[in-house]
Length: 207
Ligand SMILES: CC(C)(COP(=O)(O)OP(=O)(O)OC[C@H]1O[C@@H](n2cnc3c(N)ncnc32)[C@H](O)[C@@H]1OP(=O)(O)O)[C@@H](O)C(=O)NCCC(=O)NCCS
Image 1 (cartoon, rainbow, N blue to C red):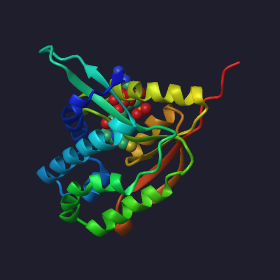
Image 2 (image 1 turned 90 degrees about the vertical axis):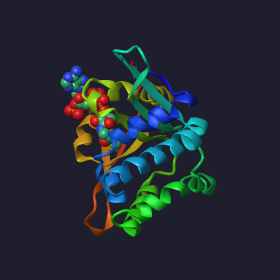
Image 3 (image 1 turned 60 degrees about the vertical axis):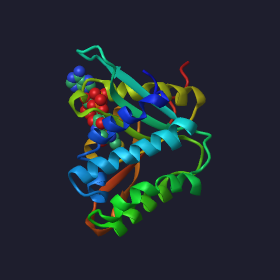
Image 4 (image 1 turned 120 degrees about the vertical axis):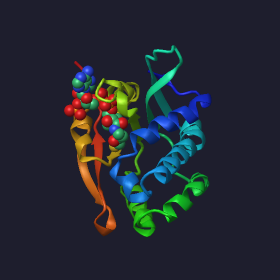
């Protein structure tokens, strides 16, 4: 496990875009096929480059590659416990993604959903897992769990909570293995997907 380097943003965004291609929230926001793939790549590139590499904690892991070249297996993007709230400046960074949202299946409901998720996020200092994704062909090999490790260990040492929004019901059991508990749900307007809000209390100190 290691921190992502600035020169790996494009590669990491590609891995995340592939991991989230079948995500119910991505499907609610972006048109299927090439438009979704392009929008996700752009979205993750902006998030990594402007929001999470400068202010956050971005972890990655190298997968063995037959050619010997470096290949990222997955990426975890965290906001640190003491990080200030997102600013207008941060929001403006995401403007290049708006045309893809506007051309999506239901742009108004999509923006409402994003606002509701933001609104539901706790305001107290905690470790926020904004994104976790493993390359589709490398899932179920332990990379996702390993990627959570460094920050969850640190959260335990600091006695801090961790928080995430899960966009797939099937991920709840995965996160529960890492001691996250469902504390709420956000339902997209117009019969869209549900997001499960999950909180992880710090592990009590041993002894
Ligand atoms: C969710 C996600 C990050 C998990 O990553 P992963 O690399 O597959 O995670 P792991 O391999 O550590 O664990 C996944 C499951 O595989 C199991 N597993 C791990 N190693 C295994 C192995 N060698 N053999 C069989 N199963 C294994 C784990 O026990 C776990 O099972 P669980 O879901 O019942 O808890 C990944 O599925 C993903 O990227 N999904 C798409 C994007 C997404 O949904 N991200 C989360 C948004 S909230």
